Image (tube, rainbow, N blue to C red; front, side):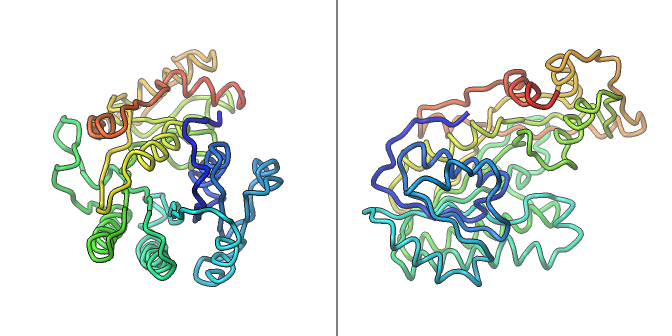
Length: 319
């Protein structure tokens, strides 16, 4: 569902990673809220862009940001709007993929962030939005993680995000930018990465067989993609002063993998006795839930969809 919640008619917005998991939904929602948009991605626009491409307020640049920066700038300038902003969605967002190729991960998640920030400085764009991850908190021992909690790089992916966060803070403080860093909990949609726990379960539900996962014990904070996109926009319209603002974007509600699997089965009318796990891994109980009280305080908004509602929306199209 594309939400119309804000009037962004004064803005032209560059979206990097515009064909990606977050970017594709963000582009459509920004256009629905009357922003003009330049999307850039090394992958072609998805089929869901059919209507967006026809929108005279939308431009798409195919290629890497480093190679196509001049074309992106030209398209950005061509949009006659008073205010400019960048939503930097490009990068590698999967833990295992980053771990397999750390150099590529740092190039995609850190170096590219520097290059996009430089683009902002050179072209006097003072608003910047960036998705980080709740994984930077690690396991907080059964308590929801708050923004002031210590952060730790437990793997290459979280290390790249923490590095990017630090760089963004430096640019915000040095150049007077307005930078918003949204630390996301576990985002899900029908296009979620197949190697994630949600992706694994959705694929198995679609196939109609057993629901087999590594462990049913971990507790996570699952948030539907439409809520994430609306959260980005709510933060963007609520915070416009110079500085760097780090905010958890989450439901604040923990659900175990077992609850996730059972909810998916119920949504698809599949018996829950098909759910299995590797018993030797049941000791891997961990909790990663993000406190969203700062998000609520800053925006007055809470996520719309609970886990059952979000999964039903996805599964009605998959099964």
